[in-house]
Length: 223
Ligand SMILES: C[S@@+](CC[C@H](N)C(=O)[O-])C[C@H]1O[C@@H](n2cnc3c(N)ncnc32)[C@H](O)[C@@H]1O
Image: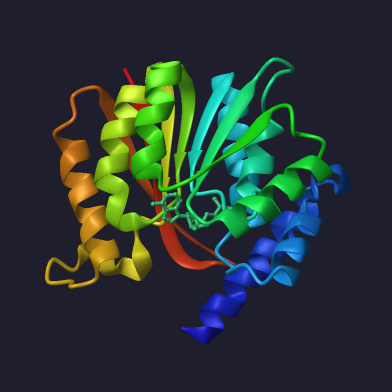
């Protein structure tokens, strides 16, 4: 397995060298996050670029992210917005939110990206009361136990035609283990069940390998 993981990382490096020009190198954010001792659970650079491209392809003007950490994926997503676009990112940990705000300011995105501090289960209803269903791109990347709740809120907050991306749904294959006692795996399994019963969303899943190991994401389209 270790040999395979090394190979995946080598291939990620080849793609990074070919596909990420210097102006798209946001590695300084990852460096700040490491120095601030944040957990190393940001998306990979290639995943960040994928989110950026998906938001651009969608022509997203209002983006919602659940799970900010130090703002690495936030910066990739906010850079896909047009001049008048806006991103809201929800983070429970006040210290992580502070690091993210500083990174967002360094990237010159403080007018476009707003960090909302608090448990997303509490801040999502507030956001809905304020903005209703304005979001055309939603990225779920917080605690996996709450993915079923996040799906319900994403469905409410999404505008028709919105794209929903839910990260870390493979969990090294554990999602296929129906006996799993891991609450995060159970959260993803319940999320998938709800998704299968949700007529408003067409979805697929992509399994991924790379510098972050073996995982994957759900890609959904809100009709
Ligand atoms: C995987 S990290 C996000 C990584 C980030 N999207 C990136 O790629 O740069 C998940 C984040 O969700 C936050 N989180 C966990 N539970 C939460 C909750 N209930 N409400 C809001 N944020 C939460 C964690 O503190 C953590 O910073």
